[in-house]
Image 1: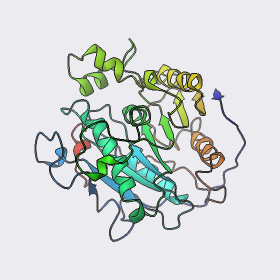
Image 2: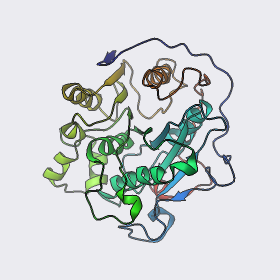
Image 3: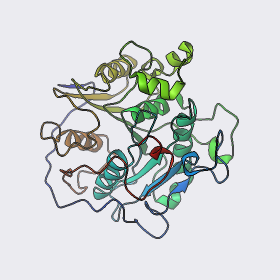
Image 4: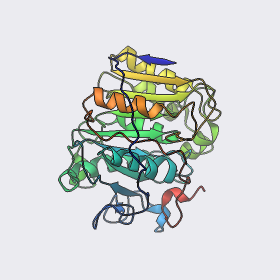
Length: 328
């Protein structure tokens, strides 16, 4: 099923070779071997001083940029872990191969509670914009791409970030906007306030006895407005972990608010496949995304055409630590 409230066009795909290995660094200063801490000192709200208490940003810069567009990747994990490999590093390399810069966020998860993971996402957006010149990107062409619970984080940024900080700034970086310029949601958890919510994610984010008012405020489709950025959504209709109504309800809210959006639903049962290259029934979803990025002038049609890897990276790559390792 394909639903759109914006213009549509076809775009062919032609593989050009393998995507590079995810663990190699992209340069002397950036790459998976050189993560950037979100804060120079102790992170706000830290409950310890170990790797699990220090959110960090992994920078993936393309060898040959095709545009100044960039994407903050927010892997899923139910707010108890972060799928840094499959929904982070692998996706970043796919974007790099097409000339697009990517940033993978390893954010704090349970026992950290709301709003800490959301604040980590806000800080990441602001930090990327603050260092846009270093990264060679346009701070006004920065999107957020969230998977599963990372989709809730991404949607929270898209619906809950104004142009100024609504809290006391930690430093000058916090004075920048944390709102993404476009939004990509893959099998996203967007609703916390209905009977079909994923109970594990609800408890990991809000604790065992969530405040109903806070849960309602954190249900992102209720916060959609005309200021929400253009959005692309992908989901499967028989997702066993996050019900498809999450994507449908968020899309409906976008349409009612007059926001340009495109929703692709596949009659399949899957959750957590990332780029989904090993599933023939789903592998075309990234071609639809690429076409959407080109139509919105976020990626040039001349950007290299690359295949989606048939093999998934592990959920958590060997040899790495960080907040998202906690739940694996």
